[in-house]
Image (cartoon, rainbow, N blue to C red):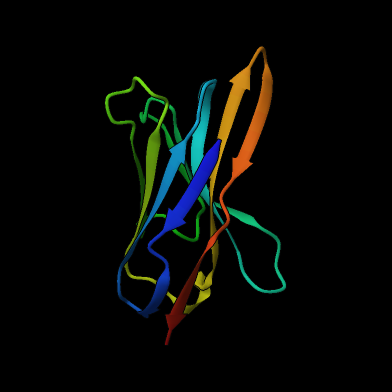
Length: 124
């Protein structure tokens, strides 16, 4: 499984940014796809997750109403997915490295995969 993030960068407070994650090589069932972030000196934290069917989303309280997670699984025949995180009205406290995450499931075992991360910096 390979996860490649893109779209990070420098943005002013109040602005918008869209992160993308290209997920490939998926051969098992997908349980969830999501975004996490880690600010300097802090633990990695959940930002948002979405179910494999796209019908269920979950957001951290700090981003509710500002961030939107979505996914595109193309023609759904090759296991590839693209995960998006639309960030609006960003704040300086959103500054962090953002990581894409996919959790695969097989016989009740969960297999998490992570991307390499993309830096988001919000200036005040």
